[in-house]
Image (cartoon, rainbow, N blue to C red):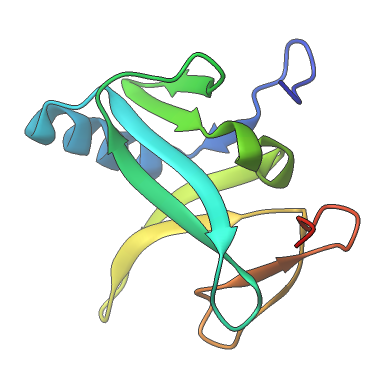
Length: 121
């Protein structure tokens, strides 16, 4: 929808692809849908949900056995994002490196986009 021909909307690191593929197999799902919603102290939050079937307007990115669907409303916010999976002593989880983010809260759970991208209320 907001893509550039020949360029994927998001990139997925090898560790993230491995984890997404593992989740798909263990849960019997077709992939993960990523999106954004209003919330958190910075204004927006990422969402991730299991998907059994992509919607017709989803942007689908497949890599190394992993399948990610990008919800239509989130496509312009996520274009150019790298999805990684990190494991540390205290936590593990998906990390989004998004060039469209202009600010984030201290804990990193919520984000803010430039005014021209932010949804109107």
